[in-house]
Structures are given as structure tokens and as C-alpha cells.
Length: 168
Image (cartoon, rainbow, N blue to C red; front, top):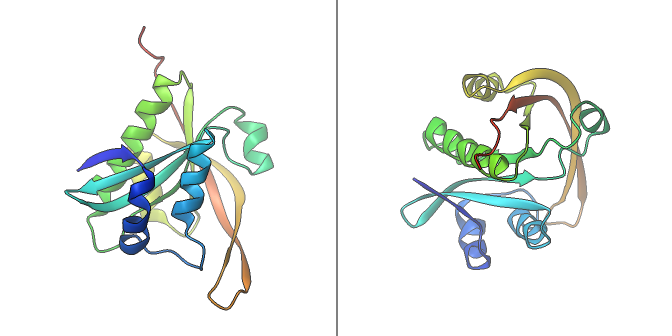
């Protein structure tokens, strides 16, 4: 498995291989934020096929309670992979690369949110050194094929991991 930043030419394949809800592709939104310098959109590859992705939001989590407690902490957002694939190597690989990039940017910690009803993911994050129990709502929306806007509020817990200082 290899991890790369998303390129414009990857978007059609991502839309085909990594499913999403709604009419508008979140992959294209993530790529646009990356092009603005706000995020880094990482892809995990198995040969020529994308098998997972995540976004590093350099400005951190948008939830006010998370911003207040963890200012300046970048957030790994949208970590995902198709359910039929072994989850641990893909998620672990993406998180390790996110950590590496945060260290290069001289960030002291890295954070992520996990849905309260996802104990398997929380266990993975704890094994990788993430700690914390800050509850918050992850609010997002998508438009379905009929043009109806759906607003979602997922009950989550924000976890952080301290990072080593960048090497000179």
C-alpha cells in the first residue's frame, strides 16, 4: 500500500471506487480545499486502485468546543475505506502519513473525531496513541439525487495524539 496526495486526475477514479452519499462528490470538495492550501487530501492505494482516503484539516476541527480546547491542532477528517477491505492497514497507513506530515509542519499534536457508536475505530485510534474524550457534534450536509439537502449531526468524541518535534 502506498499513500499519496490526491491529484486532479485521481478524482474520477475516486468517485467510481470510493462511494459517497449525495450528488456532489466530497472528493472534489476535498481536492478544492487542498488546492486552496487549507487541507491535505491523502489517498491510500493498492496497486492502481484507491482503497481509502482522509483529509488533514490544518486549521483544525470546526466544532467550537474542540477549537477552544485544542487550538491549532490539525484534524484528520473523513478517514474511510470500503468495508470489505482489511481496515487496520489502510487506516493505520493513512494516520501514520498524516502524523508524519503534521510533524513536518511542526505541529505539536494531531486530532480526529470518532463517532460514539464506532468502538472499533476508537480502539484502533487508542492503539495508535490517540487519547481524549471531548464530546462534540460533527455537523455536515449533503444533497441527494432529488435535490434535497440533508443535514447530519453525528455525536462524536475528539481524540488527540502528541507528536514529536520536527527534526532539524
